[in-house]
Length: 112
Length: 113
Image: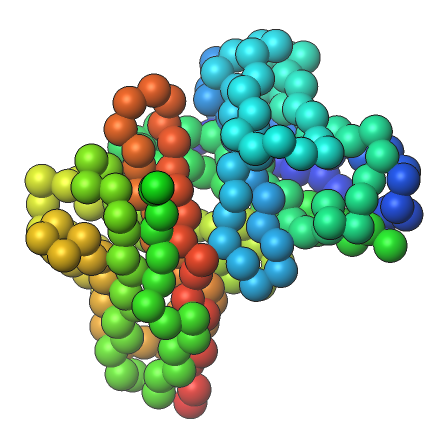
């Protein structure tokens, strides 16, 4: 069965510092991968999706970027964090049955 | 524009009662709808889905109803238990292109003993 791993689980970073969040998947090949942001007590906003290695599409303009150097690895980055980047970041991949996604457990980022 | 929203931000129920969580959507071309449950500190977890050509689907203690006439989706949880306490999201799949989901803002369900 497919599994999705995200780390770290929590992160506190100062404003202006860089960011790198990693997501890896197992039990599937050539998956569609997604990065979502969830502000505290809010819904989920799609940031990036990827249909393959080095193929990244951005849904909203922002301070973040994404990369997919390997088939099962998806990375979310920033060169300089802003306070508004605080929130939870969720990685997801397409479910094997039906539509919808399987989500990772997320990284809770606090920018101070 | 496309949007999926929820009628109630919080819902408090007594243990053993039935819960109904509502959701409105605006994209009449969406072909698939999903309910997710998110417990504190975890990612959203798939609960149940329904295709647009159906109006009802049942799972274990959960039922999803779809009313395309008024663009309304609901999740019914029978005999609500403390373990059902979580935030519930509805999502609609936008047709065309990749598997794009649009999520609602979420409803928090609080189950009281």
